[in-house]
Amino acid sequence: MYPDAPWALPSYLLADPRLLDAGRRRDIGAIFALAKGEDISFNQLATASGLPAERVGRLARGEGEITSLPVLERVSDGLRIPGGVIGLAPRPWERAPAPAHRPPCQAAGEDDPMNRREVLRGALAAGIAAPGLAALARTRHSIDAALTDHASPDLSYWEGTAERYSYGYNGQAPTAVLADLAADFQDMSPLFELPQTVANRARLSHIAAEMAGMTAIVLHDLGQHRDAHAWFNTAGLAAQESGDNRLYAWVLAREAMVPLNFGAPQAAAALAARARHAAGDRPSAFAALASAVAARAYAAQGRRDDALEAVDHVEGLIDQLDNSATADTWFGYPEQKHHVHLSQALTLLGETGRAYTVQERALELSRSPSLMVRALIAIDHASCLVHEAHPDEAAGRAAQAYGELPAAYRTGLTRTRAEALYRQLPAKTRGLDVLRDALAS
Image (cartoon, rainbow, N blue to C red):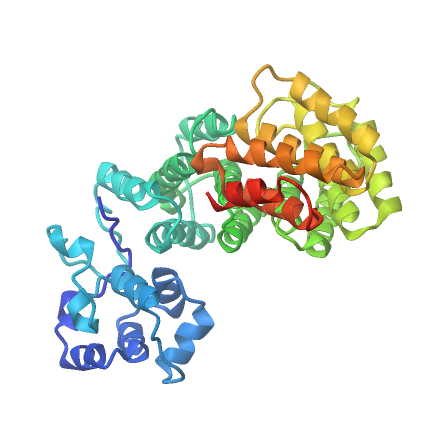
């Protein structure tokens, strides 16, 4: 199934002589300008085409041009411009029955929840690409807009739905979980438009914060940094509206992991500091998570004393958490998660003896650790071996851990960590080629 396009151009515009002339000249900027006249925003055009919004705006003003074939194909697919209009071969979706005309900002199948869910599943099933992200972004935009309006009665179902997702992947591929989250989020969106009590509004905002935060977590795991930040922003808006400061601290701490895991430790440290402040002094899963992320961020910056202080702080907190706070969910801070966080902090600090201990403990705490946890621990272990001047063993261990992952897990976070280790290894390391081949597979 080829995914539908949330911002398909209306049929009358596709027949407009001005658009056909622009298409013959491959003047994508002129097409963007015509689409803007049909109330399709530059942000929507950017999402549909996979271009930065700033560049879309410049193109629409006649500044620059697009010559890249992949970009032309994304524009064709995202706006449903037949390939022949802009000098391309017919696109795969042109062989499917054409969808009924709809206003440009209305998603296909919007009146049919089952169809809408299938559209989202189809858009995301093949992985993270422009059409899937466009559908996902539209869901987020609808929640962003709705958070300034109203909400509803039957919330128990949605609280249960959020709880179900909080238990993590459970063996499912991240893209499958993302598709389900996005579909459920869309189904929940209309609740914001209904009249509500203040208490119900707070409950619904709390659910929205959890759902948006979990969507962001999956996007982060898939390596989609910009979209993860956007969903964390939505989660933060909802958490603040719910009045739950500790939930807001969770959102900030989780968001801090995005820059932390993808090369911006200073930004991560700033977010983690805000999370620690929002969590307050009372022992909680959220306070523990904020301190653990801060420890990793400080260690990545080389701020050894700050990192060790944060490690000591979270070590003190973990002993004070009750059973609900240590639940093995995305909202809890279980002992295994604690050791996974400390593994990276101590590895970055070169505290290899302590790091090996927490790595072993992290694996002991679960008879079947998740695929991602097992791989990340193995890569941390390999990094410790580099610190101890055993690069050959490190390369072999990392190559095996990464190479054994299913394809759906060899992306985003695990790939970033494996690439970072690869860059640590001396040029003459035996097994370097094996790790390079694993990364290229």
